[in-house]
Image (cartoon, rainbow, N blue to C red; front, side):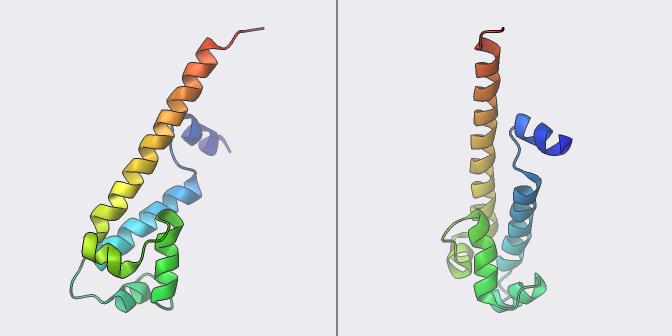
Length: 106
């Protein structure tokens, strides 16, 4: 529980969310390999097929489809999504810290 609190205080994603992002980054790196098919990437990552791979991507990037990610540069697209979410979390943590500093003390 301390780790989750520390992460939120520092503007980090919750551990389960962070793991989802890391899985998506690994899947994206594999998807960028032109020798791999989306079905092959799904199998390599432990998914029964492309629809389940798409569901895993959608957990971090809603609406993301493997073929569209591949066309856009999957790793870069997922990394950009992670950076954007992390920046938002850091900003929210900074705002909470500012609010705590300016709140009246009893």
